[in-house]
Image 1 (spheres, protein in one colour):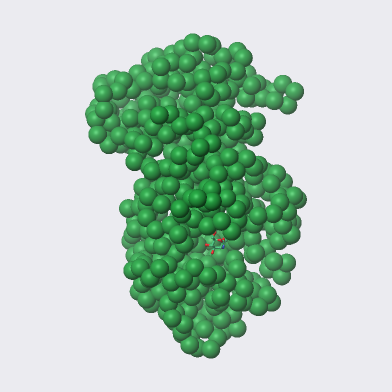
Image 2 (cartoon, protein in one colour):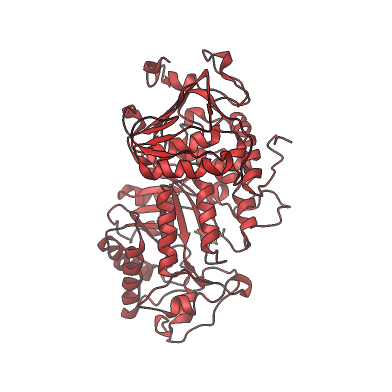
Length: 527
Ligand code: NGO
């Protein structure tokens, strides 16, 4: 299969990239014409893989197939995915070889910690990786190579044929995320879990949960019980709200971990804190608790940064949240603290950031945390949510050593309307059709922020106007896959024409999964 060509370069272009199978059935020069089987080609994957070599060797999964996996977790996950639609037994064996083999040996070094090599030949499918995460990512590619009916929860006829060839693949950025604002409207555990299942399909590996805001506090904190009990008792529009018990939250973290997704918890401070201020009068400078808030205004609340109790509160919340957090990050918000004097903002952050570091976590903050008077903290990450292409706060944080998560609001905000007539969402950052979500380069979007300073991308879904799971689906699909591709695929594969064809091919899968996506007129969806 000429794998030696992978990774070699020609005039700055990798040969492997030059051999990439293009969407819409077209193949780049040198690819066997016979590659396109009835099941499509092995390059019909989203996000676009680093390199694809199609071959006329499709594999058909049969009733007697077995799964052999060096990692029991990923092997079991694949079996759980394939058993319902196929009706096959698909026993999972640790080690050895099967029709589907997941091996922690033999992957090329280029695949790194998250990548994989996938080979489809008539005799079977082999995924090789250096980590379980790499195998998991290979499984997501394999999942997309099966016909869309593979997503069915009941038995379908098949045949379960996968196009032949080889993919060698690894991400451009280590961090590919999306955010769910469970504060403005609370989302039950079942909805979060289904969302995790869906984002995994596009190799999104972080789910940021916006757990507190003016309208609701959504996680139990034992040392400050009124936060959830009272501060979580409503939401935008005045509904019942809700909050996660610690056990429910652990369940989300564990479910995410099985999908190789890290939960990034956020407690937004010192602004966006009305729910906390309403729950505890002592957190207010005047000692008077405001009423609960169910509107959608921003920038009016602040913890009292001159009171010691505020720091005891922050320390308790961070300690309890860090204990629940498997991943390396703890997000402390820091946006729109318009009701906090600038000097006090820096005093607050300079006391709170070390609390996070002291619990062994890296600080993540919205990019206002890059204010010059706020010190760097080990491993600190700044999340850019502006709408300009240069930002002094981001460059200042980067110059101190921070890495950047790119969430430009005019490109990556999933709560923006697609068009003026979109029934849901806001438009303060602009209208974001699918092409707008796709046509930007996270590695060069901000002047003075080189790709090497970019940790990755994140698409936030704020929920002022988002109430139900249907709403989440409509706003996230198909824009989230666009952001996922920006985070994963090498820039050399970037092409709107190619992307929109691969995107269209996802629609039958979403139909089977019951995802009510936005049928953008920019994409030629199959009938
Ligand atoms: C802003 C604001 C949020 C809003 C969101 C709505 C950030 C980081 N703070 O983004 O409170 O919900 O816009 O688009």
